Amino acid sequence: GATIVPTAADAWAQQMVVKVKEPKAEEFQYLRPDLTLFTYLHLAAYPEVAKALLGAGTTAIAYETVQT
Image 1: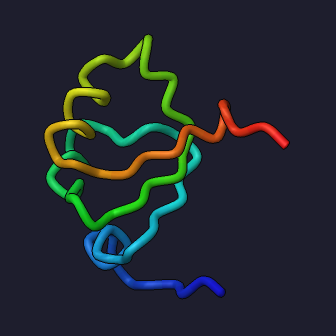
Image 2: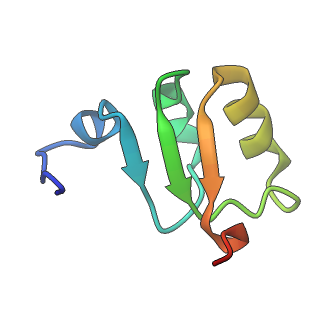
């Protein structure tokens, strides 16, 4: 299940974060190797997001590419 937390920092401190949109530049500080991020990424349009994810070692799953 999910847990509602009081701050964005608390949310980003979890093992997995599910977002509607790609991380914004001010959220890059929360990216880290033990984080799994499930969100819309569209990395071709946002190369700075790709660089931030790679630099942080974050596991990122782009939901627009998930197939059943």
